[in-house]
Image 1 (tube, protein in one colour):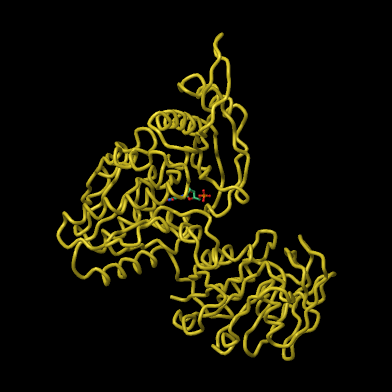
Image 2 (tube, rainbow, N blue to C red; image 1 turned 180 degrees about the horizontal axis):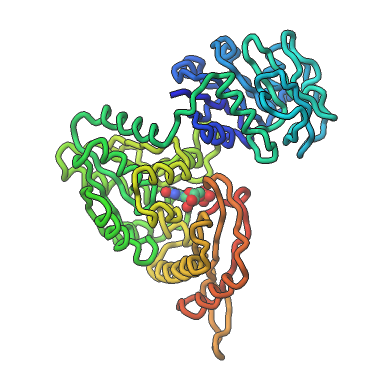
Length: 510
Ligand code: XMP
């Protein structure tokens, strides 16, 4: 399988570049800029892309991220984007200056169509710029291949060693021919084939799991969502009935969810299933806990303890399958990405866990999981279920989790989802749910004063949960939700709508 990793200097769009490369059916992943050259070689890349960065390459007061220059001796093509181009210019003795102001936005760009990077493009295209520093002198042996009215050197190439740099961003939608440029780089310059298909991922993962689990048995933590189910079905294809799925009801699921999950699973799959009601166990551990990270750790820990207990009842069960996705890994804090929150299935795991993890989806995004699910023949109602976090309503109840608050939230959440479905919006919205904050406000119902909880409605659109926007729900839909929640759910006297995007907020409140 061909792969073209993105060397990450912390740029805003690094992640998006890997997604674009994958969309073109070439495998790509982010690798930190200071990864050891031997490790890069082990990946046998067909080419490399150098990302943008929030740093200025000219900055004296910080440690500017650079890459081992040996990457240019690997005999593979390299494409530097934005900071990546400036870094190439600097490493090969070009000249860079800072203009002091940000050039940000769409601009017309003249392209030299003799460069293979711009094959089949028009001589004048539109591109998206976002930079402060500019290359003003090209390194020896390089040619200029693109320019804009503001920037005479907007693209460079060194054809002999296939080194390319572009100051603009081909990965964003505002560069309409950006995908063609990436295509040219991947297929013509790097010589890749578009073989990273969902079928090839499935085959590869099945083989990997088969090789890993020669003997012994496997358990899989099932949440009812699409990720763990896709992971379970993949692993069952590799190990057959050596797999047992364990569905733990922690009492923090949506209303009626536990029954639905078990029923759907039994109807559709011939995989062993154990259903555990652990409501009291989880809720007793959460008494008095208000800190979101503590809640996440307690829940992550308790899940694993239950899996271990169940595994000990099955002879030779040493492996635990989880449906961990790439965004869970990134948000739980990799070495270079800051920790935003501890996803229960990554950073929330106990240090002394005995089971060995199998995470066949660890490098994939949600939309890719859904595509795999389609290939595996999963039913639509599971595939298009909106994501639900492992710690469940515990991170949608802000403050201490109590039985009373769970009941209120479940009832309010049910109305939110019902109204979203009634409006025909369920599939097009990434997530829509209710949140309960542990504060009370004054209201009046009939002639009586009330003092009760507010419910916060959250609905976001997103492609991969890394960024999200609040959905401009029709006022009629909001009105129905509000009227129904206040009228039908005891303990609520106010409804508000969350109009924050991610960043700077996150999707969940905790
Ligand atoms: P945030 O709140 O970080 O959420 O913007 C991003 C996506 O991840 C889900 N989420 C989780 N999923 N375990 C999970 O399985 C977790 O601990 C967890 N925390 C957040 C969230 O619902 C959203 O889709």
